[in-house]
Image 1: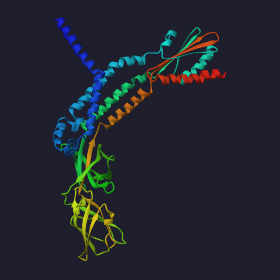
Image 2 (image 1 turned 135 degrees about the vertical axis):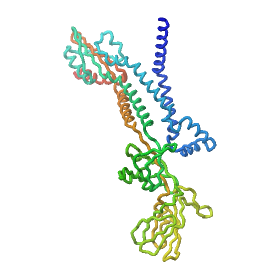
Image 3 (image 1 turned 45 degrees about the vertical axis):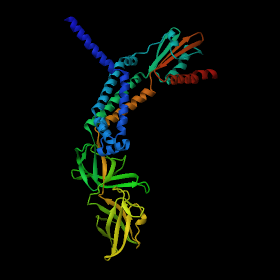
Length: 484
């Protein structure tokens, strides 16, 4: 019985040792870092948590219309469209965090001993073992030599201890012992960043909201269309797209938003653009897309009307409405509207897209009820705004025809991620620019001369440390000696 118990105990111990050794493996850490890097590239290429239609358009561009549906199904099954919330990605982060912790604990005792081991005087025989070593003689007595050497040690940043025996004196000191812990600060920062990211993914929200001009909503939507209450209402006051020159390539698109909380407009007409979001109650609203709502019958054409010699005024007209030019008998009636007007080879007008790429309105003008002339007024072409009578009618907007596509995010872990980034910056600075340095200076009285031996070490940047020692020796010893 005793033997069986012993065997079982040894077996259990061996299993624990094997698991510990596996988790403490540097190779495991490299593999996990590579996996995280590779999957993060995928997560960057495939936009996360967006509408399925947008993802499908991306796959059509990438794989073509035939392979796109199959690629989308595979991406869905592998959670590539919501990768950072997937079980497999969170599992990789968890295992990597455990690997960092175990590796740190495995190497901590040796680092602790190196940090806390007191520095001792060095035997004269051991001086030649160090890569940084200097040997020279000074004329004079021991006290003068000590006064000459001490400022050098002080300028190197050391607080020295000394040991004396007959005819011999030794300075020895060390600094930067705790910089050896810098790697642990970096490890901790990575774990903190992972924790913040996981908290943000598990308890935050990442969705969208398509908000037509003039409408409001207290709900956002997940990628699969589930409703998410915001706790307040957001309204789209207006939306506008600017283009490069006369091309159809958008240069910028802007939304004007109002936030209403408990019936009060807490944020009024805040304009947002790409990379200039709106933030409220932990939510961030990014300008991400836009599109048309062609079936909306409540749209309004907005004109800036300037009578000849008069002041301009803005008028809003329905699809088939009419407006008057002040101080005249002219009335304009909307005949038809095109969101994107173009002309074919036979100079016949047609609409080439439902997007508001080149808005144009055909307006029929009458005077005292009698037809006078028709004008085709284009928003992007100022030469079409001038009327024969010297009046000016500018098409400013087609309000209610477009929606603004907002990406809605709430990330409660973002401040934890920021904390992790600060810790990483501190750890990297300490790791790259600070080090653990030691120095020993051995002075021996030799009848009118003082024999001086210097030995030094550093756990990194040894060359820079030696250069600094040489610079101070030239400045305070050899230069003075030459002057005399």
